[in-house]
Length: 357
Ligand SMILES: *Cc1c(COP(=O)(O)O)cnc(C)c1O
Image (tube, rainbow, N blue to C red; front, top):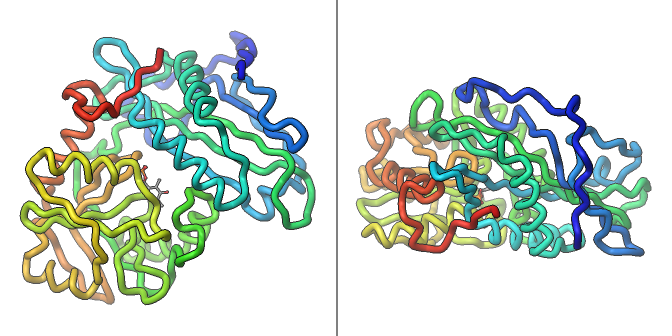
């Protein structure tokens, strides 16, 4: 499918943030966006890259009422030699359609997903920040826009991609976060939508997040929705616990998001001399293992922050510290290696990087 490039009038060009330390996350957007429509009568059509602008949508659109939407998140990096690298974007293309399938969205052809992103990023290349730790965050989204109040899959969709230059996640340094194990609310249940990257999962997580913040914690660690006993994941990160040189994470049981960063950690760690294991993690056993210092480090994985050290865990009013509240050695090494591959400072032995032409 050809993508029409709609001219960008000079007066619509935005001023770029000069101070890259002020970028933050997802606050600024580039000049253009990709939009492709799907109509029941035509399939995918009207692909265009047009000036970034608000959509005019009927208040009855299905997405506003029944949350038929999915999204993705990935990053583009500008390497020192000027090339632009995406990290495993095929994984995002595949997961996008897996998420979509769960809530009856039409699949976006992987080629359209990838080519569309590449063309958009290429046109917007001047927006990619270059300071250490910065990148261009890519947000593909698919929404139901048919204006009707009956509960049903839509007959009209927008697939769109917006871009946001983002700052170093750890502007204040790579510091461990504190996490509250949530024992009241649940994020997902078997058979539900936990495995899909859909906005509804986030809406239902807000209340727990807010209550955790009030208690002084950065994020919520979800337990399984059936027994509230097994570790699932954190907010927008998968969770890992380190036992010496052995790294453990929860298995993909259907209620956990299958993270690209999670998969990368599982593939990378063995090449650095660590063993990895996907197994059910009982929260009681985990607390015992932290108390007895068998757990030496803990970290989260996700595109936004790549690797997030976890220094403190609270479960039912018991607060336990890990790694003496410092960043663990293995956590630091995984972060350095992954970000090194993404930014071209380290050799990509895995074929994970895809260059934008
Ligand atoms: C996106 C996301 C992750 C992390 O996935 P990555 O592909 O590593 O960015 C983890 N959990 C949830 C709920 C997510 O939405």
